[in-house]
Length: 184
Image (cartoon, rainbow, N blue to C red; front, side):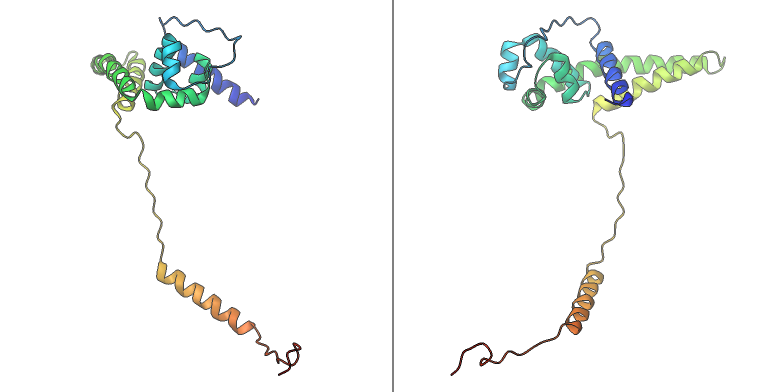
């Protein structure tokens, strides 16, 4: 395992720990990972399913969530689609918590700007909270512009010239029926 991958996994685990602060989750990792449907996972392991739904709402990927709740990544994928309403409810609760933080951090940043004392920390806090709120709101956070022009007439002309060139190179040979052993 590369150092970069190990660092990324450690960062994801730390982020999950921060996101789940105060949530108690006991998982017996000696058993095989849970490999059933999302419905059965919710029925048999409601606490783990609740944590998984919260992590889905926070935007974590299936693999790290599966590791955290000791389930198969396909179970988490199924849970992601099966529990859309619960995920949206979690996102709404998170928005309700984060939005006041965005507003308070913006106010605090504005208060500190004239003094220029510790404004950097307030601005960073505001940026993190704002980005989190935007992500939870479903507003696009990136715009991808694709500029590709395809000229179909030009492509047809190129193909036609290639075919014409190949036809010039080809030599036709007439086969006499007598040569084939078909005498009439």
